[in-house]
Length: 433
Image 1 (spheres, rainbow, N blue to C red):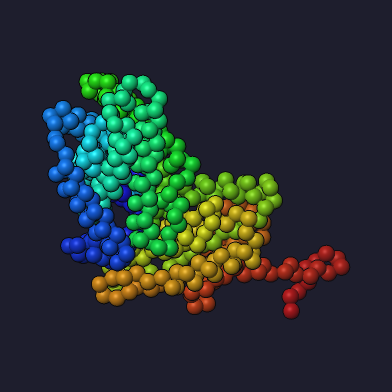
Image 2 (image 1 turned 120 degrees about the horizontal axis):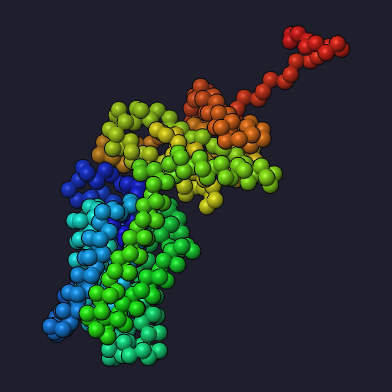
């Protein structure tokens, strides 16, 4: 399951802590979308609740599945939850509710677990938690409705017959597609210039979704046989979830908390690998060092919270203008560093200029005014300005210093080295006129 409690590690819009209603500081498209989803979810829950007859056995199963989800949350609470889009295995508990219980239970299943996540694991902006519960509930409700349409007697799922299991698997896929689509639309409304690939599927996400779907169907089969068998299913699910969160926390340790880019240490490791590859294959490679002009003035004028938001927006702009295999990270303070595999001097200058122009057009809204910034950049080319990462960084830093001396908001390369002095016939160096 993709949790949207922390859909983005990058703050958007105005600083939320300055408003009692952070949702209203978001782009109008996002506000309208979130409100529409929440209204539809609320109406649907009310309609289905009135049409559903609540039986004690159904309530007992719903309570048991919710309790298992709560145990998973508590068992992984000490690990914490990384910022950014995070994955868990909680769908293992609300997919069985979707298959074995009336659809209203599927709509309600995510609510208590999102409350626990907010209170016990990681507190985030409240509207994101509410939207997350609504999005998951709507996706699970759709899967439940489809399953009950094709499998009139849900108990047949535990009989071992092929058709109910195949229908359950198909409905689990439907759940994943709808959940991801609802989240992707919200993310795009929040950041229209962001890449769809950041919130849709890649190879790793498809693999994790497949594991979640299989686990949810298996738990539904076991739960249908005997509710007490949940005691045997719970420990392996907890272990899998802890392993998944541990891997995510390791990945989070490689990123900068304020920008979501690679931190300096992680960037250096990846850059070293790319440079070794470029030296071995003979392919060109460029390094671009980017620095925000007069960033201290932004902090002094608007405060450090706005300064952090400017950092995040610049990082987002850099990321949207680069290729998937370019290596971008935060180098420290207001400096960013970009490695461009396969780029010669002309391509590197073109990319750096595009980054400079895009950042200059960026505006960060605040309560006082929209903040705009410019950047200066130094470009260094492998085997021209340096043979290894240290030499490239030194050359790019000199070029950046040159760009700032020339007035900032520009791109520079290192100054051309002086030609060696002419040598006389006897081999002595001649005088320079």
